[in-house]
Amino acid sequence: MSPVDAPDTEDLLRELAPQVLGALVRRYGRFDASEDAVQEALLAAATQWPDQGVPENPRAWLVTVASRRLVDGWRTESARRRREEHVAVLDVPEPAGTPGQDDTLTLLFLCCHPSLSVPSQLALTLRAVGGLTTAEIANAFLVPEPTMAQRISRAKQTIRQAGARFDLPPDAERADRLRVVLHALYLMFNEGYTTSAGPALHRADLTTEAIRLARLLRRLVPTEGEAAGLLALMLLTDARRAARTSAGGELVPLADQERARWDRAQIEEGVGIISDTLGRGPVGPYQLQAAIAAIHDEAPSADETDWPQILALYDVLEQVSPGPVVTLNRAVAVAMVDGPRAGLAVLGTLDADDRMANTHRLEAVRGHLLELAGELDAARESYRRAATMTASVPEQRYLAMRASRLR
Image 1 (cartoon, one colour):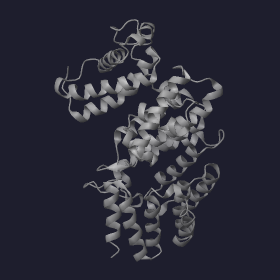
Image 2 (tube, one colour; image 1 turned 90 degrees about the vertical axis):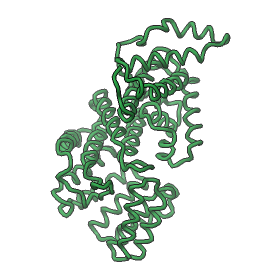
Image 3 (cartoon, helix red, strand yellow; image 1 turned 45 degrees about the vertical axis):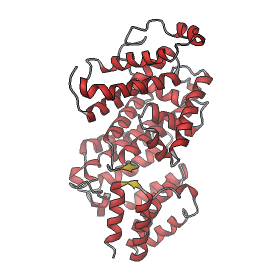
Image 4 (tube, rainbow, N blue to C red; image 1 turned 180 degrees about the vertical axis):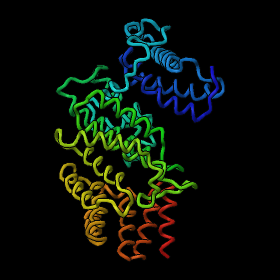
């Protein structure tokens, strides 16, 4: 075994978790029990590996431990027959199938089984594939943690009762389930890019894993424009990550970022993907968002950003995929093209939208537009309210700083 520090262990376990779960589900056909067993194996690894070192084959170690935990849970008389049917070769560390096979994409589609509601599909995907904790998923959905824990538990039981098979879905179901898979990866990336709570602004482990899965998904469905659009959006957004924080860890807004620190290779790849994709089929929300991100990334400076083109794309996006977040972002584009008061008028249409009640972003954008309009007292109060509504420490500090500068 080789020594490893705690952060490295966490990264490795996050990468291996969906692979191990996929391996167990492929072998035993019990998603709910397998997921519980994998969580126990991950906990054992997190406890033992920092002191004892990582085994030569960490994936096989996790599969073996999880398999044993799974079988231990079946050791009752009433389960004996099922255990004998499901467990044939307990001492073989790798399940049947190709050794080292990565079943992550099949696992993604299983988590998006049509017997589940869309919110449950998303929650289960983020838990089983993305490796997010229940608390992180609850933050992403703006619901209490116990509510999310119950939702995930019910989702696992529903998959079991539905008798779902661990295979890629038939063509008739693939489009609907693909849409949910894309949304889940989008949420995973967003949670990593702007962490909803805690001291860090971003979590590179989540964005890296989301991009990895998006690449795999695009290879699986190479003609699906939205799969390409999502990958392009992730690359174009993540390219700015290094410039989003100062040397002291403070948040740096897009307009003030040092563009020389942006990852030009990622920008070129993202622009290339979206350029090849647009116009080849139906245009969806991820392609439109990627096109907007490309305009930002290709602008030499904030002042040279093509805001009229961005506004035109938001107008289309609001038709294709209407929602409060789209309207919120469109309000900024309106302000940059037609003036801050025009943007505030668009923003006002969201005041009665209950979906914006539990997020700080409406007040944060309002503060920004009020500041541009010269209404400094009102802007200061909006920034202050926004700071109290976010659990992200960097965002709290940034919003409080913006408020204090308007005294």
